[in-house]
Length: 254
Image (cartoon, rainbow, N blue to C red; front, side):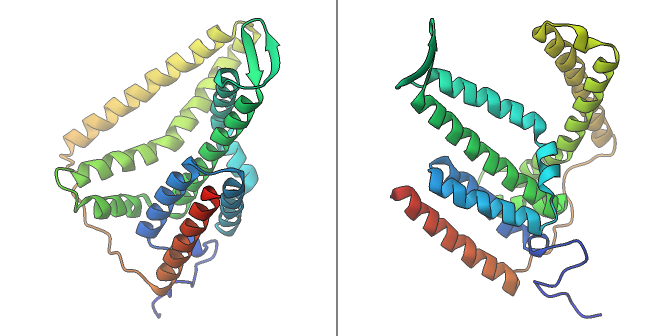
C-alpha cells in the first residue's frame, strides 16, 4: 500500500487533519496575535475562514455552539463589563450606571476576538492528536535556552486532555444539583456557590489522583518524539498562512 500524500485523506478527515502539527500550531499563534488588534473587517475575514475550516474538518457549527455554551456566558460578562466601564457617548443611564456607544463597540470587538481564538484552538485540538501537539511544542521550545520544553509540553498536554473532563464534570455537577431542586432557589449567588464548590473539589481530587498515579509509575515526560516531515501540502498551507498574515496586517493598518 503506497504512502499517503499530503492531500489524500481517510474517510471523515480533511486537509486540516493531515497538516503538520507545527504548521497548525503556528497558525493558531498568528491568528491569536493578529486578532488582538483586528478591526471589524479583519475579524469578519477570520470568522469566514474559521467557519470554512470547521465545515471542512467535519466540526458541526451546532456542536461547536454546544461545546462553547459555558464560554458564551463568560463572553456575556466581558461584554457587560466593557459596556459599563468604557467612557463615551451615553446610550442608557440609571443612577451611576451608564452604557456608552464606545463601550458596546469595544465589548463586541473583544468578545469577537476571543471567540475566534477559542474556535481556532478547538480546530487544532479536533484535528490533531495530543502527542503531535506536545511534540510540536517541544520542537518550537527546544532552541530556547533555560526553558524545559518537556515540562511545558507535558503541562500543555495535560491541560488539553483535562478540558473535556472539566466540561463533563461541570455538566454532571449541574445535573446533580438540578435533581436536588437547586433551581427552586431564587438566590443566584447560592446557586452558583453550590455548583462551583463541588465542581472545584472534584477537579482538585482528580488532579491529585493523577499526580499520584504519575509519580507511582515514575513518569518523567520523556517519550519518543513524533516524526515531523513537511510535505507539499504543508508548504502550500504555510504560503497561504503567510499571505493571510500580510493581508490582515494591511487591513488592520487601513
